[in-house]
Length: 124
Image 1 (tube, rainbow, N blue to C red):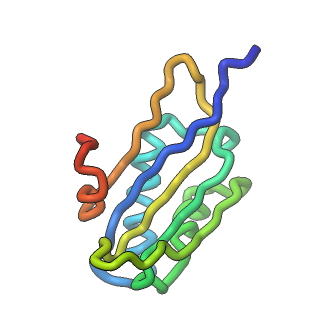
Image 2 (cartoon, one colour):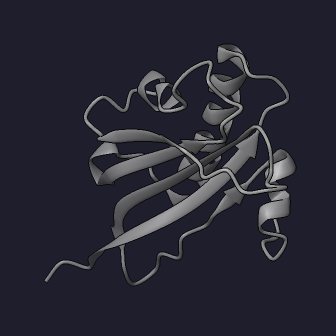
């Protein structure tokens, strides 16, 4: 019997400006932290990745950062985050679903920049 189990991990970051370079750079940084902390080195272990961006980010799809990292066989989806009054602006969120060894793995979420305010309970 396989010890592989399905997990999901979340992360978020922010940008100062809505331009493609900044969105891709910030998303790549977030993905690299998520990959490192959760040992997601093998694309075959990744089931899918779901990206959201707040309504003030329209310059590009954040999923482009994953494609730039070589995730060519992973289903990626982008959507607009719901617009909550007084919500965090210029925020990119990611949820990655993946397989990992169920005996030893604990998903490690990553929150960067102003997005740290979304999860003050997580020490980074």
